[in-house]
Structures are given as structure tokens and as C-alpha cells.
Amino acid sequence: MATTTRSDWAAAARTWRRATEKSWPAAVPGFVLVATLPSSQIVAVLALALVAAGAVLWFVLGRPPGGGAVRVPVTAVLLGLTGAAAAVTAPSPCQVETAYHCARVVADPGRPATGRILEFDRLAESYVDVDDPRYLEFPYVQAIASVADVEWPARDPISALYIGGGGLTLPRYLAATRPGTAGRVLEIDPTVLQLSRSLVGPDGVPGLREQVGDARVTLREETPGRRDLIVGDAFSGPAVPWHLTTREFLQEIRRTLRPGGSYAVNVTDFPPDLFARAEVATIRSVLPEVALLAYPGAATGRAGGNFVVVASTAPLPIDAIRHRLAQRGTPFTASTGKTVTAFSSGAPTLTDDYAPVDQLVNSSWVR
Image 1 (cartoon, rainbow, N blue to C red):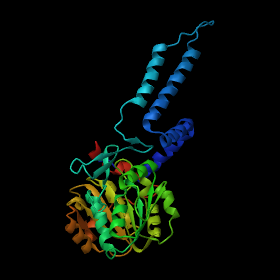
Image 2 (cartoon, rainbow, N blue to C red):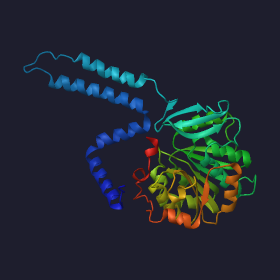
Image 3 (spheres, rainbow, N blue to C red):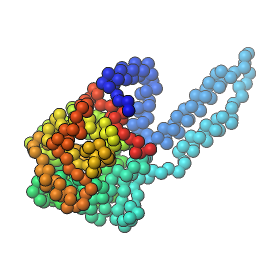
Image 4 (cartoon, helix red, strand yellow):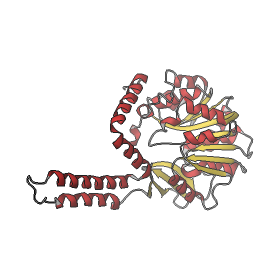
């Protein structure tokens, strides 16, 4: 399998800069449209713009020599307008289409009364039991909750930060199991927060504040040494956004954690696990004590799926984590030491100058 080298990444960046220097009139509107409109509306806007441009060109170039009337291509205009209208009025699988996701909430067929699944682009993003905040369906969420259960004395409130707000599942869980917990959610998509609030009820999550914005920017507003636990669960499609994977970002995470605090991040990958290995190597370069919670065989390259990487500057209570995983029946193993070292051996450290996440991650599972 071909891999992307550091020189390839730099060359691609130079090519992009040269291209955008000459095509900024197209690039800038593109970035503006993508950031502000759902894709169906973008298609409609572009269709109307093409119809208008075509009409102008037809009028200018289609004028007969010596003057005379210009015949209007009525059929072509009608087809263009019909296509634009279809883009807006066609049935959509989305409950709501945001600037980032086609999002919807569906009932869990196995637990239709209270189980709700938040889907982004038809991928299950979060699971919420509307009646029971302690109910956790997804194994990776159970794994992060298990870390939180044993890192601090039972029912003691903690200070937590959540990067990615889909479902508000873990904030609800910690508010229920550790009353008085203070939390803050950093979420780039305001509509995701609205959908999540609709699932947790009108009273919201006790002690939780929400902030809309890119976590790479809003994280800088955190008071140094404030958080006991930081949870990373932000995705763009099948991968973590690249700027939330780098050593520079991890340095901000370490700055925000209290001494001995923990960072627990969810990443998804499949063999050969090029991204997961690189992310573990990057995390270890900043937070040296690392545990890898994953499906059996994943830490040795024989399986894939969700990897929960738990990291700290202090030794992790790995035996207690394993006991809690077994106690709740989570199908994950917990690896440390030589296994983690072997898993990340030879993998590159991701930086702001080199983070080809989309090329590293094995996203074949979404096709």
C-alpha cells in the first residue's frame, strides 16, 4: 500500500498554494458556500448561476452577424431551472442538513421506546437512552466511561472537557454518576448541539456549558491545569479532523489538563492501522503514559474498529480499567507497555506541517 511521505505532503501544499493564487475567485466562494449552506442549496445556487451564465453567453455569442434577434434556448433554460428546483425539493434522508453533516435521529429498532441513534451521513455517531443517562450502548463509549469510573473516587465530581458534542452521552453519564461535575462541550456545528439537546430533554445536562466553534481555537481559551478529564470524539466523516490530531494540538491538551489528568480520544481505523499507529505515536510524544483500549486483536494489527487511546503524564490505573471493562461486559482489551510501543513503532509523529490523516486512515469500511 502506498504511503504519503513528508516531502509528498510539502509538495502538495506548494501545489495547492500555486493553484489557489491563480484561482482564488473560484476557491474563495467555494469555501464560503461550503461553510454557510447545505449541499442541496449549494447545488441549486450553482445550477442557477450556470443557467444565468449560459443565458448571458448565448445572448452575447449567439447574436447573428449584422444584428437581429437572438433566439432564446427555452428548453435549455427550463431544464436548468427544473434541475435547480429538484435539488431543493427532492426527498432528503436528512432530518436536518448542516454545513457539515446530513444529520438525523432514528429510533433503535431493538429499544424503540427510549433508544435513539444520532446519525451523521448515515453513520451512527451517538446513542442516547432518553430515560436513562447511565445506559451506554457503544463499546467505545463504555470504555471511556470505564476510565472515568476508576480514575477518581466514586461519585466525586470532576472537571471535564468534551471535544465533539454529538448526543451529549458522556456529559449526561458523568453528571448522573458524579453529581456536581462541571463540564464544557466544544462543538463546531450548532445544529448538532440543537439535535443533542432535543434528546437530553428541556433541562439539559446539569453543570454543562456548551461552546460553538472549532475546538482547535476554543481550546486555547481554557485555563491551564483546569481539567481532570478531556474526551476527544470529533469526526469529519470516518476520520478525526487532521488539526485535532497533531503534536501541537496535544500540547494544548496537556496544558489544559491538571497534573495526572487524562485524555481519552476515540479514533477509528482498520489494518494496517496507519492512522491509529501515527496518532498513538503522536500522543506518546506529549503524554507518555498511554493505554490502548480496543477490540481483541486490534492492538496487534489483527482487527480494527474503534481505538480509545487513554493518555496522561502519570501512570494509569490499568488493572482497575480492565476490571471495570469486564464488569460492564465491554468487549475491549486494555494494552499498555510493550504492546503499545510495538503498535506505534515506526509510525510518524503528526504535526501541523505533516498530518495526512485522510491518506493514512483506512476508510474502506464506510464504502
